[in-house]
Amino acid sequence: MLLCAALTSAFIFTACDDDEDAAVPSGDVTVNFNALYDGANLTVQSDVYDYPDGSELKVQLFQYYVSDLELIPANGGDAVQLSDILLVRYNNAQEDNVDSYEFNEIPAGEYTGIRYGLGVSPDLNSMDPNEFDADFVLNDAEFWPGNARYVFAKIEATVDLENDGTFDTGVSYHMGSNDIYSTVTFNAPITVSENGNTTLDIMADVQKALAASDTDFHDFSDESQRIVHGGNQAVAADIWERLGAQFTLSVR
Amino acid sequence: MKNLITLFALSTLFFAFGCEDDDSGMMGGTDDDGGSMITSIEISGPSNPTSYNLEVPSYLPGPIIPEDNPLTVEGVQLGRKLFYDPILSRDSTISCSSCHQQQLAFTDGQALSIGIEGQSASRNAMSPVNMVFNPNNFHWDGAHESLEIQAIHPVENMLEMDADWEEVEERLRNHPGYPQDFRAAFGIGNTNELTRELATRALGQFERTMISGQSRYDKVVSQNDGFFTELEEEGKQLFFVEFNPSDSISHPGCSHCHNAPRFGDNLFHNNGLDSVASLTDFADLGLGGVNGNVFDNGKFRTPTLRNIALTAPYMHDGRFSTLEEVLEQYARGGHGIEGESPFLTPFELTPEKQAALLAFLNTLTDEEFINDERFSNPFE
Image: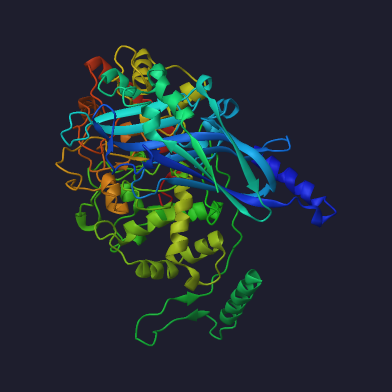
């Protein structure tokens, strides 16, 4: 509904513009969300990865919501919103580790960076999923029971704790609530050229979310640390904190 | 310009047939190879379908209606007739409704569906309920991208209707009523335009109207109408609990995959049914058999639990006769093999907890839906 109103307003505004040549110069921006594990491209389901405790794991699912993806203008003006909500998801070994989004007609110019909310912004998080169509990312069964509040991010993996070649220990971290919503900001010069295409690569490393170092990592051997759904969010507080801190950006 | 050319072409086609000398307006015969040509008869009657007002309760998601197949009164009506008409099967003995019976929430009570001549199909009949909220990957294995594509297959499946769509199209073209119905629904002017694509579009339209949202669960939770019993409330708590403070592992976790209000997640899981030595050893590969991803072997679509008390037997192969068996299976927590959902963890299922979960599951039965005249057999 909001989008519809915005588009309608944009149409009326455009239609009333006497001077067609006065259109704002613009270009396209592609944002690639890349998933990594310890610096290498992540392949879910199939690839085996080392964990600092000496075990091995296969990542089954990695996903997170991105809210209010915005470019920050160098001239100090209002941020240019690329998207209000995205769901970045990796759950299929047949797909690559890049979730790409192209945004068109972005005002050309200089920007000092890009920012986004990790999770679902409080405004959207207060909405009933059923206000959206069944195929919209905010009605994709990614909410806690009760139809309110979304699961901001999920990391699910199967772990071979005994090093017997069997990935039979499930770990599942579902995280999200308004109090942990956080903003990721990159300060980097970004140029959007008229009729050009600027590519931004945002990297998220699952290993860096699970482990800070070879000695500081989330403990899968402790059964109480393996499943985080709903009420025991505190168990995954370290994962959430590291997840938000580990993103990197590359501008092309 | 492209549209103009299309319009011109259609006009030419219309006039070509409209100017046919034969007063009957009928063309037929054989082609150069001696094969039968499609029946070509002008169709008269209403041809301006009326938009269908789909009523969706506010507590259910916004519906997904494909742009190329909007709901119309006439299209839904035609789809309903086709759904119940055995004309789609080779020997005209079974229809869609043979395996999708309204009183069983459009399932059939069989472990594996029964096709023509008593043949067993390969899977359990799914309940085509609330399909209007499913964006894609229909069927147990996600083989079909849309309801329309899905509807093509049972007609041709030798274990189901075992018909030839060309033969079915000819039956429909020569039927005393269907040509007018197709014209009313899709505006066609000649029987040679009556195709399987239009038939499946009509079936898709009808199926999208089959919305179940008036169960006791809906009334209590979303309509402030009545209360759960103590046992139902206990079952609801068990069903939806995400976290057990005393034991982070041991809880049913039903809602991980069967979250309200759809009670399904439009995803595919290995829900721990079979202990196999390797991912290639599943008797039915499920999603992996469709997409070729071995890591998806043994994964099947999460079915909705709406009307679950009516849709026994359970699972893709109907292996469990009762919901009690299903709960006991989940309480065992799977087999610890690769690919199983990480949500599968053993939990204590006392007789009291089982009774409570069953009581809650029974609140998902929608009596209004299974008695709704709009979805009933139009030929009775």
